[in-house]
Structure formats: structure tokens, C-alpha cells
Figure 1 (tube, rainbow, N blue to C red):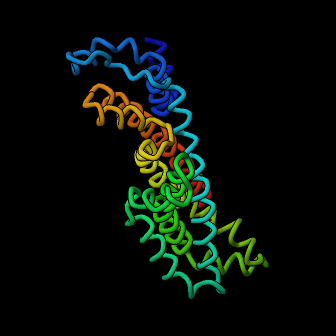
Figure 2: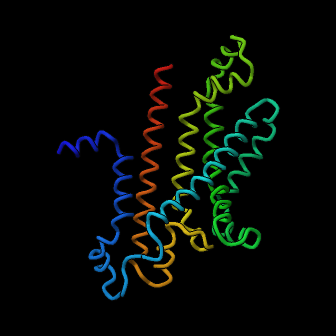
Figure 3: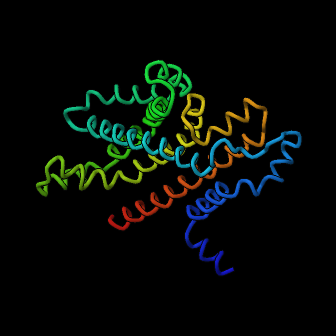
Length: 251
């Protein structure tokens, strides 16, 4: 009972993470359950690769794509909110929207002939697909800062860059983080498509299950991806809550 209470105090991110790691390490112990799903299959636990290894590869792809999307998205949104770049604001918003409406499968189909099979095409697809929430929320966060606050900072003698990093970005941080949270969580699921172009990740058992008609494989991959998404999303939720409380305290 006390252990459960300590675990609950650690928050949902820790609980989801422990469930995720427990499933990755102990998938074979659930064989009776998956045997019920596929009673006629010779093998019901995906064994072509270790689930912990697949989890690490999945995280690597999503992390690389997300870092690039954050770097490009936040930088571009900041640039078009400065006096010298405001003319490009509509173009940036439209370009980011096109990136997310373009299906990731189509991006993969176009990228493979140029980049080859493997991890790089799925990183490109996730980058394009993850830009819109980051750009949109960065623009909303910066534009939502009270102009009077900016004028007060200007009156204190702050330069444009000082106002950006010491005033605007801290106030806009919760909104920006919400966009990053959406982008990363969606890309955790979308990254499974990388298995179709040779990028080994948690999409492997799903694709293998579809090809071989093995529902157990599909469920195993889906459970791992779902728990990973819950872990990351709940961690972002706690971080976002802390930023909002800090912002309220500063106000």
C-alpha cells in the first residue's frame, strides 16, 4: 500500500514509464493472453527484434525529428514576429499547414528514391508533419503577450533581443510547450510508418502482423506505442503545469 502511494506521488509519467518498461521486458510472460488472440498461430510473441531495442530506436527517431522541428519551427515563428520579418508571417503559416496536410506516407514515397531506405526518410516526414503545431503555437504565444508589457520593457531600456528572451519567450512558454507536446505525441504514433521503409522501430511488429495476418503482433506494437505516447504526453503535461504556475506566480 505504501509503495503504491509513493508511486502515485511520483505522478503519471512515472507510472506509464514503469508499465512501458515492464511490457518491453516482460512481453513473453503475456504469451497466454496473446495465444487467446491467435490460437492457430505457431508464434504469438514478436521475436525478430527485442522490444527494448525497438523502443530505443523509436525514441531516437522521434527525438531527432522533434528537435529539428522545434529548432526550425520556433526560430521561423520568432523571425516573422520581428519587425523585419512580419511580411513573411502569412507565408510561414501556409507553408507549415501544407507540411501537416501532406500525408506522411506520400512524403515517404517521395523521399525514399532520393534518400534511400532507412531512418532518414521517416525523420524528414516527421519533421514536416510536426512543424504546424509548433509554428502555430509559437506565433500565438508571442502575439498573445500584452503589448503594454513590451512597452514597459522598452521603457526600462531593454533591447529587442532582451525583450524577446527575458519577457516575450517566458510569457509565451506554456503556449509554445503545448504545441511541442502535440507535435511530439502525434509523431510517436506516426513514426510507426518508418517500418515500411526499413526504419526499425515499434512499427515493426505492427507491419509484420498486418502482412502475416497475426493480430497478436499488431496489438503488441500498438500497446508499446500507446504507452510511450502516454508517458511522453503526461510528462509534458506536468512540465506545462509547472510553467503555468510559475507564470501565474510571476504575474
